Length: 415
Image (tube, rainbow, N blue to C red; front, side, top):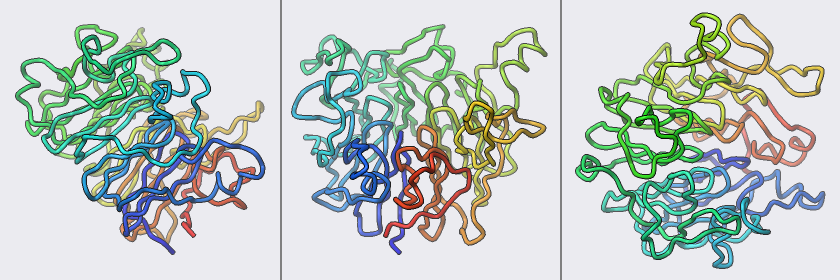
């Protein structure tokens, strides 16, 4: 069986990179959204993505994908990529009839990439000069730069500002002296981690997922997250409206919304209001874990942490079993996790250990999609759980049909 050296969860799809550099895709983004019965085996199975060179790094964003070739070239495909040269292809969900039609990956010209990330409708690239380049939608500041003087900036079919050409982000005087080493993303955010340990953020901030920032709802240039200035940040990832931060000591902090438990502080909004007379949550919470963390992943409304001991922990929404807890079915037919002392029917408020199958090795990477989770172990085996309506768990046609969600981490077979 083919093993994986990287696995990444997108919005409603999953990507895997084999040892040879080939890319496999399962789910509803990247190779067409067709839901006809004739296409079900293709949708639910693993398909090879046709890229002209071996791939060293891949990233599954919510509606599109990015990959770096062995040469350093950057490729993009799926929703949110360049479709027929029309700018509506940058944000097809907001344009006119620009859905993913299964086109092959396109080369993004004049970029030598060393790291990549992507949110809902924008892409982030760290090039070989350690510049952060962004392209795609910019209506909430997620591109981290002004579009006013960009020669390629325009509007998509819905009239929202987009820039389909990768260009450097902007920042204050402090940012211009930083050396960016890693990039991350939230649904509408761009994140940059610097050699100094500083964390910078741009984009939507209505839930303070970038910190207080002077009360600014949207941030249009890279600005430092002051609330974690005493931490040496090595990784940061964001969901729909929350952000995870990992420092060099293995501590995990969270910012942003936490009404579904994605902050991992063990307290719901209702509990805050009952105990404190206010629903105001601290801007930053530290997540209590039984070991040092070495990896983090943010789904839309759930969070996943990789411990140095190879164990996996999750918290947040468990509506589809994406935290690996047993689900039950409520009277309205929706799937919910079973209640326990700390969690309500569908929200996991504090980290719980994800129990992988007995034959799994130590986990070495974690990734979170919109409502599913992907774990890879030391042997290259990939385990998936959570939402599966569009085949994103990669369980195959026979198993996948009729299984809209799975709360049990299951080893996938690439054929």
